[in-house]
Amino acid sequence: WTVAGSLALIYSEAEAASLQYELAVEALELTEADANAVMLLIEEGREPSLRGIQANSEVESARAAVDEARANRDAAFARLTAAAMLVQPVTAIEPSLLNRSPDASFQAMGNPLTVQIAEAELEA
Image 1 (tube, helix red, strand yellow):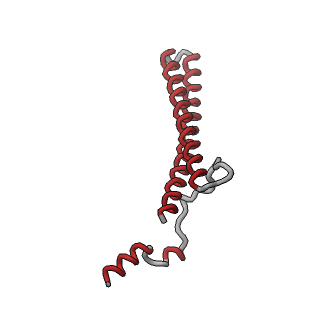
Image 2 (cartoon, helix red, strand yellow):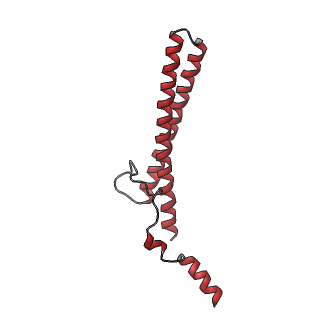
């Protein structure tokens, strides 16, 4: 059980890191779009040039966040590959296992084994 629990934890960390990377990429795209809009306003004389410098700084910060998220994702994928003893490295996680609901048959099983053992020990 310990190995399965560790593998499940490593998998969930890898999936979370993958989702964080996707969010960082989306944030970068939005930041770049905002920066482009600011640059157009500067060209029209409706914004000071300092605002353009700030926008470029925000874009670079978002790029750094993407790089950090990519590194975290790649490290999490490497840990998952090693823990699962896979021949091919993990490069993506699809579909998500974290967002799935348990099957009805699984829910009908009752209490988990550890709870059943504890209950049996109490009754004994």
